[in-house]
Image 1: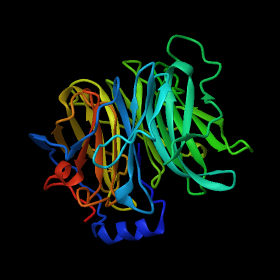
Image 2 (image 1 turned 30 degrees about the vertical axis):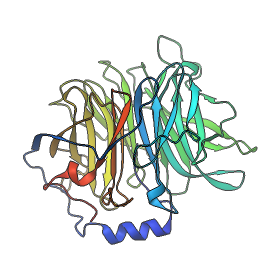
Image 3 (image 1 turned 120 degrees about the vertical axis):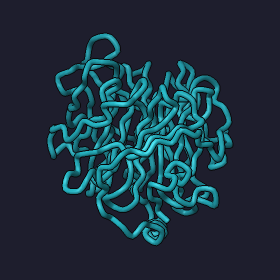
Length: 363
């Protein structure tokens, strides 16, 4: 998932008008813990088998018509599409996928000479990326793109996490994870996505990076397009931070969220206040909650991310999540947070309910 980069001038103007005026880096302070359970505004219709990860597509013409795309993680799984009230959009839903795990969205990939918004999911049992145009959910991958080609060993080609990164020049990359991998700093592989000359997507491997503790696995990956960072959950260890641009090298910038988790580190979502400020939310799966950290770090130390707040949500054993900070409609004036729940649903939350009185909102 990602810190949302606005695809349209009209939306950008809306967001600037609603943003907080302050951009002062957050100072380290005692974390605020909320024990009461935060309730969702809506709960989606159920999927057939097993929800895992959501992604939010912002409709640039009318944000109220934005969509939520969520994976149904099964050998006969799919990408389920919902409106902002959680109602299933059957005509857009894709079924028959072989255990799709995570999904992410990016805006404006040039295909056949025109910009196309895309949703990319990891199809575990075929070792392929599956790519669909949004909002019509038509395949643009020529049957799928194999990744981790040449890797051997148990589970090392079984796809899990996916995050898309669009750099300042418009290049779009997919950063892909798997169920198991090496501990030599090459767990994640990054691919450049381009037109294959026929209006379909091709992928070219550009780097291998990412430390791994060897404790559990790496699934949740999130990219901050604006700041150019990628975060991923090394389950049982913490959240690791790198540059998203392959040209900036493979140095690990930070390892944070290393204590206070009751089970796995899971879904990562980013709330963007301004170009440089906001919050990083990490799922504390066993606690049915999320821990919140400053996106910009602390004063003078942008790679220090101290805990700010812990919240408990109604979503049970939440794995994947996504967030946008664009005003969408009357229910979601400060953005939308979506979390997977293990009862085959996704839960839709208002940011102000997550933030409480201690964190900022765009308005």
